[in-house]
Length: 543
Image (cartoon, rainbow, N blue to C red; front, side):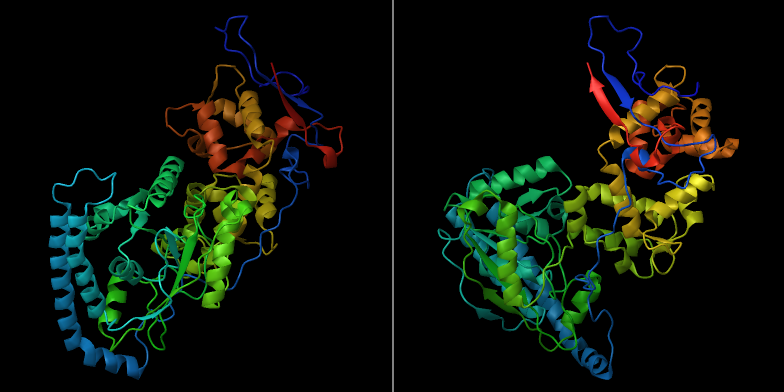
């Protein structure tokens, strides 16, 4: 591979078989130079060639909206109560099973032979579902909800076709099924759940895959269609997208607010002293056992005044959601944080990996998405790589584990890459620093073009693939001499399909999944005769 001396030469070549009249797309790099030596030992920002500067990590709140505050039975009173309630719990369990069985049979009867599910459920089938609704009240009774306090009333369906509620426990949807029998929006995974899948199908559920843009779009269209017709039941959505401990609201998803219909908010509370009924970070079996072994569980429902969108809000689901969130937060006397349902997924994955304190990995994903437009799936992918670095009990990783997972040789450049995301300068990197640093690089305007240019420069024989020899030669100016094992490690990381060669797709995909690695190719964009503070080049696409 020849040394790059003129970065104004085309970096993307036309395949040899191309016809001369086919437009040729060329990436040019102008004014792109940073002082460099063969071994990259500059003290400059390793991502300065992208125009990147140092970044700040958004501050974190001390609120943990997913924490159940009584995950264990503690205190003499609680242990005595559990012992005394065990016989009662057995009776409650029998009542629960009987109600569930009767309700399931009634629901199967109501659904039998019903094929036209795009239209409202016929009235006779709805009457059969009353049996299931009464059984649902029996289920609530078996869980210790002998009476439920209500404040306010649900508005007529023609005035407020959409209801939204905070989500604290699996008890919430059971109550709403009994009280309102609404159409709900639920994850596709719920359809396969025993008993539950059958019952929610009778509610003419709208399924959504939150990781699929097409599925979310379809769900919004279904919400609009059903909300616009009085023949369908009213719609109920939990805009938080997951359960919290009820001590705060988290960021709202916007599906309920995009249609622009008036919305009636509902808030649910579970007052308690000894037993937190929230389905936070606690197993379902443990939570059910604790409910069965209480003398009584308290639940309060408050129907709030209708929130109608202004003309401006109709054009902005975000503002409508914020207005509704403020009304609910005031009623609950809590704050609304920038956490999202993705934070709960992060928390769960960290816990499943055996982390001592999984709440340390929560990043307030709504704020990160707002700043960097990072998708949920990308955030979870970054978490997988961070967890592979074996975080310590403080949820942080050191340079050795960072470089091991990214297959980096310990050298000046890899140290600078680590120091770049070590915002606190304490020799450790948290998941939030790793995530925000990666997103910051990924979000640089020149990042994609730099990936393409780096591939072109590394492909020295111009066959549109990078061999292991070409990769080693391409990395040498930045990292110095590499052993065979070190080159093989990086080659395997880039060779996503494992075919023994790195295609353009492999190369770009690897850098998108590991954007910090773009620094390994920085020497291709550097010269020895320019000011490092003006190093960012302009990548132009010409025809």
